Each structure stands twice: as C-alpha cells, then as structure tokens.
Image 1 (cartoon, rainbow, N blue to C red):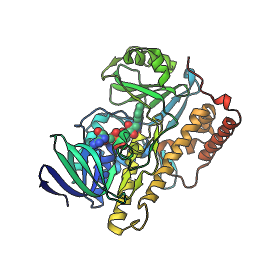
Image 2: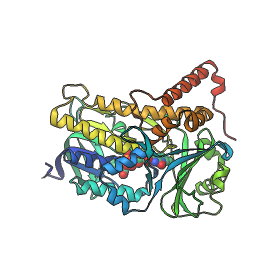
Image 3: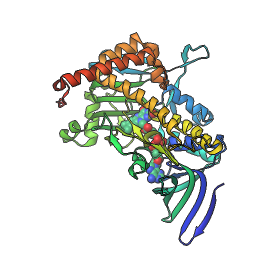
Length: 435
Ligand SMILES: Cc1cc2nc3c(=O)[nH]c(=O)nc-3n(C[C@H](O)[C@H](O)[C@H](O)COP(=O)(O)OP(=O)(O)OC[C@H]3O[C@@H](n4cnc5c(N)ncnc54)[C@H](O)[C@@H]3O)c2cc1C
C-alpha cells in the first residue's frame, strides 16, 4: 500500500513500483501491474494532453491497445484505421505495400487493421486508464534514483510541481522516461551509446489539405539513405508529415526550419509532392535530432527501463509505441514473478531474462533496418515478393523469433555480405555528402 508521511520539509511515500514517466510505456506498465495486483505510482513532469510525435501503430501494437482494455476509449478519440504501409522508392518508383495482418488460430494471415492516432489524445486515454485502475499520479520531475550501497535501486526523489521534494520508495523502479533515458543518464543503467542512425534530424508538423490514399495507409517516401519522409493520416482531415534528413544537410541549407520543412516536402519524392500541392500547417513545426541510441544493462537490481528509455533505432517503420506497450506488459510479468514468487531474487540481475527477450525483438528491427538502408532493392524484393508473408509478420511486430523465419534469415545474409564488403573495401562505404 502507498503511505504518506511528512518529515520536516520532505514528503515520503511507499509503493511497490515507482514509474518514471506517464507516456504510453509508463501508463501501460501501471495498467498491466494493476491487472497482476501490483500497486504503482507514476511520476510525470508534463501536464497532459501534450504534443508527442509517433502516431502510426503496428498491428501487434493495435492488439496491445485492445489488451489494455482501451477499445471503448479509442472509439471516443479522433484517429484513422491503418490497413497497411506503402513504401515509395526513389523518384516515386519501386513502390511496395504491406498490409497489416495477424495470424489466426490456424496460423493463417488474416486482416487486422490497426490505428494512427494523435498522440496528445492517445497518451491521455492511456494515462487516464492507468489512474482508473488504481495507479497514483504524482506531478513532478524525477531528479534522483535512490540506491543502496550494493547499487540496488529502491526508489526515486521527485521535485514536485509545487516546488517541494518528495521521496518515493519502491520495490522496483520502471524507467519509462522516453528519450531522456533517465536511469542511463543518472549512471544507474548502462551508458547511452550512439545508434547507427544518429546524426539525422526529423522535422515534422500536422497539416490539413493533403491528398490521402483511399485506405489511409501510412506512406513512406524514400529519397536516399537516411533521407526520407512520412505521411500519416491521423484524423479525418489532418495528416502528420515528417521529413528526415542528415543533420549536416539541414545545417548546410542555412534555412529557417519551417521553410526547410515545406521545401523538402516538395523535393524528397514526387509521390509526396503530388499529395501536398497546397497544405496548411495546423501545428507548430518541431524537430527531433540524434534520436538513435542504445543503453545496455537496462535492467538490474530494483530497476527495468522500457521502450525509448533504453533504445531507439530509427522511426521509419513505426515501432516506438509497439516497443513501449509490449515491454510494459513483459516488465509487468517479470516484476510479478519477482515480487510474488521470488523469481530471480538469487541472481545478480533478477531481470536478466526479461532484458534478453526485449533485446531479441529490438535486434530484429535493427537487422531489418540495416538491410533496408544498405540494400533497399533487395529489401523491396524480399518484402514484396520473395518473403512477403515473413515481412508482413515482421512489419506487424511478430519479431520475437527464437527460430528466425526464412525472410529474417535472408535479411541476416544480406547484412553479413554488406559487413564483409565494408571490411574488404571500406572506401566504398565512406560517407558521401548529400548534394
Ligand atoms: C521522428 C520520430 C517519429 C516517430 N514516429 C513513430 C511512429 O509513427 N509510430 C510509433 O509507434 N513510434 C514513433 N516514434 C517513437 C515514439 O514516439 C516513441 O517510441 C514512444 O513515444 C515511446 O513511448 P514511451 O512511453 O517510452 O516514451 P514517451 O512517450 O516519450 O513518454 C515519456 C514520458 O516521460 C516523461 N518524463 C521524462 N523524464 C521524466 C522525469 N525525469 N520525471 C518525470 N517524467 C519524466 C515525459 O514527460 C513523457 O511524458 C517516433 C519517434 C520519432 C523521434
């Protein structure tokens, strides 16, 4: 049970799980913990609703939303139904489409549409649900992780919105702080290392007046390596459009961010410029840069990092929410085993097995992205033709494959070949500046 005491000018609470961040990862963790009879306190520094990028869900992510019991709430917010992803190759050619499908009880692929959402609405309904099922919300910013001499994390210190400091002691801390990677930055989890798709900038906004396709698919427009755009319809007349370019390319343009955004939207790919002859921006133009990173050792005595709090690879195939929600459910299982049955208590890291399983899924997406960026033509052939069903599985989020599918094996072969070539002829792989 949470309790509360006032000690001089400090406040103290106790709970079973303290959760840093009330975004989808943190709020979903609280819902899954509540289902397992575990109390939690969420600490969130922002007031919801707040803007967040990341609007397109995978098929399995849509299922995770249903598993959270959010179908009624989803019916009440503006959104679009996503039937698939269309990837336009350079110059609008070499297009392929992958439908959103699930596996039925006979392991057959069947249609299973998912959603595209405005994150301010979506994140609010997930957090509200967490509070409805019993989680407590503390408004403030986590400033410190509490650690015993042996490194065990036993809670957090919070700077409350009213300026007071509060200590929250817990059996386990979940870090769901997103890209701020709180526990890594605090030196509790491993060091934050640069990812392979670092040194890029994503510039985005919401627009009205864009020409959508009939099915409201998520559209991806390829220009060249690390230079692309997304088009995600998020309600009946609003579309999220983002342009992604190497950071140097943006810096060298010497342009105002808004002008750069509007110009690139018309330059990246003709299939995109056809859709945006005359659009009106209905959100501020924002940017996220250097978003590719990895934190190893993201679990340990008394803590688990989930979603963006330990790794973000590349946004192109929309896996961020998927990882946040999936890992929330997996973390709740691991914590329930630990608290109720003592699973892992005699180990150096009680959550090592959980960590390895999460990495399996993230590594799969890393491999798929490496193949896409290094060999887009082979990738399109695999996805569209040779291993179409395996790629439908991967794009839907069935990525925790202990026995890799033939499609995933083909991806690995291509990556191994590219790695060999890079070792033998490094000059071919040197960075070529974008004109
Ligand atoms: C350019 C770009 C495009 C993307 N597109 C997609 C997409 O189409 N589909 C998709 O699924 N994903 C996408 N993503 C990724 C997606 O946005 C994230 O993966 C997702 O939001 C992760 O959820 P989370 O709960 O882990 O973190 P967040 O949603 O970031 O939530 C973290 C919360 O923690 C709070 N917080 C942080 N630090 C503290 C602290 N010290 N104290 C208290 N509170 C704190 C923050 O205020 C925030 O509310 C995209 C990402 C980028 C960069």
